[in-house]
Image 1 (cartoon, rainbow, N blue to C red):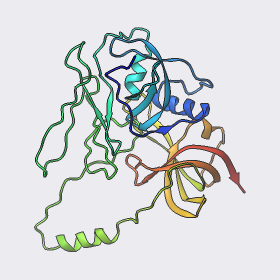
Image 2: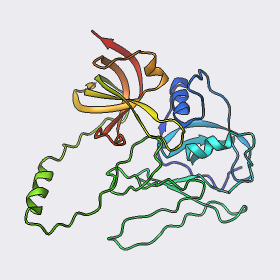
Image 3: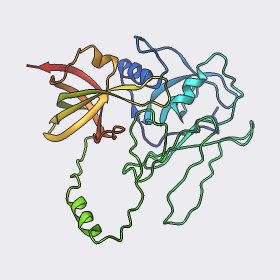
Image 4: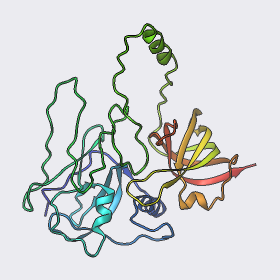
Length: 291
């Protein structure tokens, strides 16, 4: 039986090992920080109450799950977390918390107009010069899902990974020094780095331990900022600064500022909140301290 409400991802990052699944579930709040094994998760939307399997994620706004008929479905991690409560009603808001994934993997929230209707996506037609907007369900009033790769539009308050920089509108200056400032800014623009798709061998130096706000949790997220980050194999690519979650896996290393590390990980372009660190290190493994 195929479910009409399912929103299948066009592409997503698969979590290939149990350790990666546990770490991501801890990040989403589906497991406690001390958990060492997975548990059974349930999908309770659209009048259903079925076991589901977590396959991976499109981005930090969209987890990918699979139901009993092997259909894949995109859902917001916080909504999936709510479904795990024993008091949660499977006859709740139909389609709330689900996400639609476009070709650029931009997650857009959807809302439902009745219990018997499937997900309804209301796309607002605007003039080319107007910034895009989204409809946000009442359950998540602080969210903004306009998080494209270049971060042209933001304005959100909630951001589980602390990834979205603030939006700065067009700067129209009439002062005499406006043009020279614009030229200076363009000269200092960072060179774009073509990042590999999968896991690669890397090296980095621990620069700082810090925290960033998590509007989906009562506690801030612990993160590590690295410097002198470089991809060492399959080819040498100097990255500069990057960051990662200070996960249970990293805490086992008992790291200190100045430690030189080598490891295997996937690196993606995601900016750290309130910090000019443009890249994130995901799921590091085979971690070794050098020297």
